[in-house]
Structures are given as structure tokens and as C-alpha cells.
Length: 261
Image (cartoon, rainbow, N blue to C red):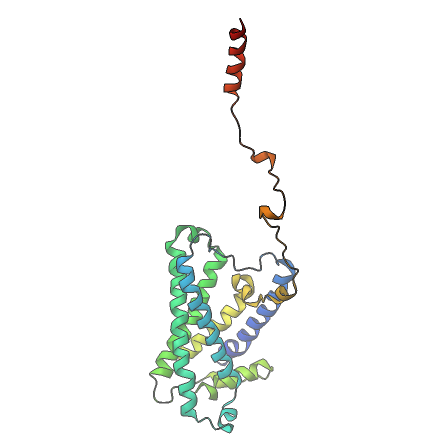
């Protein structure tokens, strides 16, 4: 049992992180043209306009909440005068709202891909795998937050005593798997699902999350030629000249000799 726990809370996270780092480097060096979202907006845009902002903005706040909760030790928040009860309120209710937005956005995106035939046919195998693992990570986190933090008592489950130090120690190669022994199963499932999506990240369209338009501000200007006729003579291309019928002209030529006779 000890070996299995060591694999779950030491080996597997390290392997997932290694797969993420090596995979991202490999993907960038070998498939820069595929480093896109593979947008399907051309096939359907109404549901996409509704679901995509919900999902992306919800995920943004979810990630910010994760970083704050996992990276900032409890001693730091106490040092600045934030009690555990106040921290719980600050973390839980905005987190639930962000989670609802993320889940609704994900459901809308999945519904769009399943119902719209054109979008469904444009969905690759890697997309299906990505949605499976992404859905597992999001839903497990939402279930854990609602069941343990929102309805789990006045202070919820204090993950800053177990999960947060476990992760920080893991990232500096001083693993302490014993910290995860008494963590509720909801959070355990969420942690494993999170590292799984991290491992498959480089091999899916999720790589576009690291595509920032850094060069946009320094790119050359795009010069457009004016079509205003006042700026100069307009030259029509011969390929677009209308086709005229010469039947009337030929008829006139046939009639002219008879008149002279």
C-alpha cells in the first residue's frame, strides 16, 4: 500500500510534469503550424459566442484561485491579518461562481460539438481525449468545492494543511506523500485528474493556452490600397469585362448589301 501511495503522490505527478515539459518542447520544435485552437467557428458561431467566454473567463479565475490557494502558505495570510474564516469565504464563494461559469461553458461547448454535425466531424480523436480528461478535472474540482467547501461546515476542508504543502514540497523534489493520506477522496480524484490533463496537454489543442500575441505590437503595418475613384483612374481588369453578343451587328451586315441592290 505504501508503494502505491508513493506512486500516486510522488512518481505519477513527477511523470506528468516531465511529460508536460518535454511534450511542450517537442510540440514547439516539430509542430508549430499545429499550435492552434483548430477553431470551428466557421461551422457554428452562436453557441460558441455564448459558451467560449463563459468557459475561458471561468477557467481564468479558477486558475487564479488555485495559484493563490496552493502557493500562498497559511502563515502568510495569518500574518497580514486574514483569519481562516475570512479566507474561507474569500476562496469559496468566488470559486463556486467561477466553477459554475466554467462548467456551463464546458457543457455548451460539448453540446455544440455533439449536436452540430459539421463541428462533430471536425472533432479529432485528440480532441475527444482532451475533452474527456478536461471534463474529469473540472467536474471533480467543482464537486470537491461544492461538497467540501460550500456544504462541508463553516470552514470547509483545510487543504492548506495538506494538499498545499504537499504540492510545494513536491515541486522542490522533497516529496512528502504522507500529507495526502487523510485528504478526502474528492480532492484526491481532482488532484489525479489535474495531473493527468497536465500530462496530455502538449498533445492536444490545449497548447494554444500558451500562445500569447507577443509580436502583435511590433508587427509591420498592413497597407491597404484605396478603392476610392477620386484617388486616381480605376483600371478594370479585362477578365471581368462583360461578354457582349455580336448577333445584332452580324444581322445588320447581312441586311446592308440587300438594301444596296
